[in-house]
Image (cartoon, rainbow, N blue to C red; front, side, top):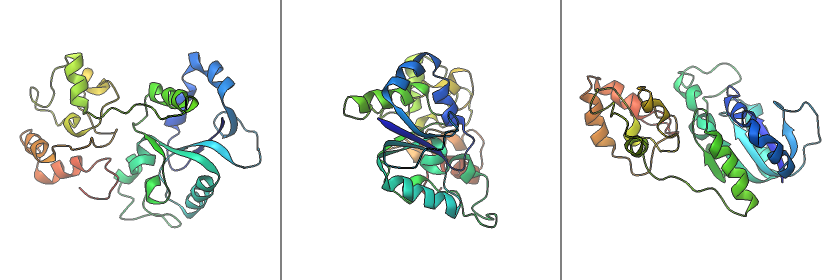
Length: 232
């Protein structure tokens, strides 16, 4: 399976999560053929068709958009990796939508411009999810997807509820699971980086967050994080 990993406006943290899979890299190298992956190889291979394109980062310049359109045209599968690629991520939260720099536009998720075959959320994504992607594609399918909120993972781990018990503005009830509730597990409120879970009970969570002492405008801002649709 030929592989291209392309990075747009981002911090390279998603790529680093894959390179940190030291124990699995040797086996993975036997399964994939690297065509483009600047973080790992400086080889300048001719850009041709690839089986799998992994894309990290939001799109915020015409050059990045042209590159993305070209990559989509020559890829069998295109997978968005991380919050920036899925929703605009931190870049979209930084206020750039109001005053973009010359030669740029507000950071956009990949699906605004091209068909995305699969998404792996997180800031950064979980290493296990990256590895599962390769394993699933090798066997002709896509990985299993959790369809529950981070709160469920907190329950399974028997974590203290930061929202109900400590009145902290935790977004676990509306954030899709898969991170094993890593942040709430150490007493840090969930910031929603994995994106919104399907059928999120936003009205109820609005009430709970307001009960933490947050003004309505701040509650709307928090609930609008990492949704990728430009709305609160």
